Length: 157
Image (cartoon, rainbow, N blue to C red; front, top):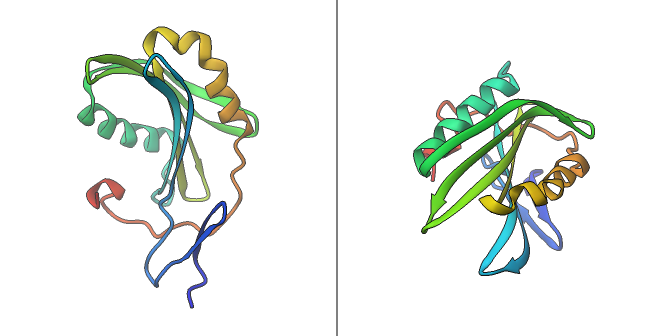
C-alpha cells in the first residue's frame, strides 16, 4: 500500500507509486444574478530554488494564453496572515461576462500555491475582503513536496 494519500473531507485515496497530489480546492459563494463568486486553489511543484516571483511569472503565462481580452492590473509583493507572496489582479471575458480575479501566489517547501478568487468585475472592490480573508486564514501544513517535472502540470492536462 502507498504511503501517499489524498485526503479531502471524508474522501481518502491511496496514490500509486510515482503519483502525487495535484489537488484543486474549489469553494463557491451564493448565487447572485446567475453568477457565483468562487475561490480555486491550485497546488503544483516548483523547481528547487524557484522564487515566488518566478512561480508567479510562470503561472501568468498560462493565464494570459487561456483568457479572452486579458488585462493585467496591479501585481505586487503581499503578506496575508503568515503567508508572504505575490498578489495580482487581472480581468478577462468569459461567455460575454467581464470577470476579475484577485490571485495570491505563495511558494512553500517546493510547492506553489495559487489562490484565485473570481468575481464579476463590478463587484470585486466590494467583495475583496472575502478573498483577503481566504488568503489570510489559509493553513499550509508542511508535507513532502511532489516530484518536480520539467514542463509543469500544464503539459499533462
